[in-house]
Image (cartoon, rainbow, N blue to C red; front, top):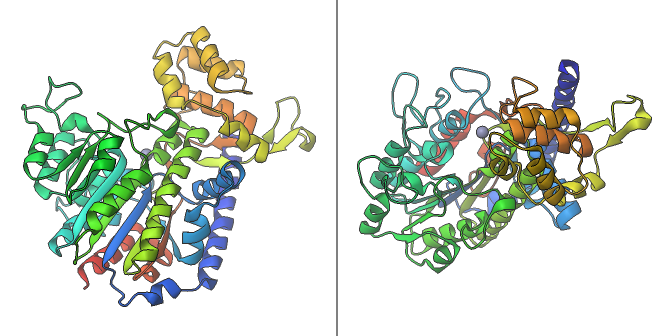
Length: 477
Ligand SMILES: [Zn+2]
């Protein structure tokens, strides 16, 4: 087990090195026309598209799966990474080697290292200026969009401060004080008081009503988002996180692209000072934690659809800097080759993951998280078999994995989502989409940028450098 796992890790590292080399070579020989075309090095608008938990292996999987299953190009890699400036970011927080989303987003937002789970507060207790605070101080409009709760680590660290990312109510109160022009995502629970359906706030305050009183339009479903026309917009589409793509009800929850479009339209109207917009897809991280390759694939596509919208906006508004990035890698994602069964380790008994295997992923119709929710903490074998037969055509569950699920045990200390991770291994054994952990890894984050200031992000840098560049570009200093 250990040996196989470490072989997988070293395979993954080799893949990363190859990809990184290739990417840098591409960046090195690509034109900087879009940079030169800007009238100034300082952009009027900045759009940051952020796929949580996605680095080079995930980006390449998006490219490959889009080509095979959607017959379309993946614009993140095929347009933005190829035409723009490309770089890598080291990600460590101030107190570890492996980072969490709060510490990584804090570094990228402020330019300072913080400890894991902390939201833009340095180890000596200072609240350091976030990218959105800097933008607001310059008279720019600001927007935050996510598929997670709006108070989740990434949007919070780009705008607010807390000693722990779990201070949900405090973070929501800070949003009300900051007044981002656009705030879209899940997390209605900490806007609504206990006693109201879905509400979890202590103290009885209705923060949705408080936003309305400040002149915000409020959208609670897709139709209301599409009908919104004002310059200030609060959209809360789920009590907690929004759903993974496979489980999403399109009438209730908009896509990442639909949210990006609404945000761009609200922020760009009559706005001489420009804006800073963060659009995050959190499902790329969630699917990684669950070791759910089918959900990861669809999250990457949903993210890429939002990148398309942003690239079109950037082409029409060349004074806009468009950045596509993530914060860390999630899951030790490792598409690889493997033995078909344990009968023989000879090459004849081996398969290399390819088109037929990604097609198997494409036929899965339920997220591993929804399987877990349906089975509950005491799964029955019958319910498990029914769900697999109905939603995972062509897959068979080996007896060792079945036992792990029914007994709710983990095979390894680095796997903490019992049902999800065992089913993730089922999918891996038949498709080659293996995972090394259910946590984060230290693979450098990838950053691609087009537009004025993009050149700053080229090369191998630290995630705090990303934050410093951002502040320079926002403040013009
Ligand atoms: Zn994560």
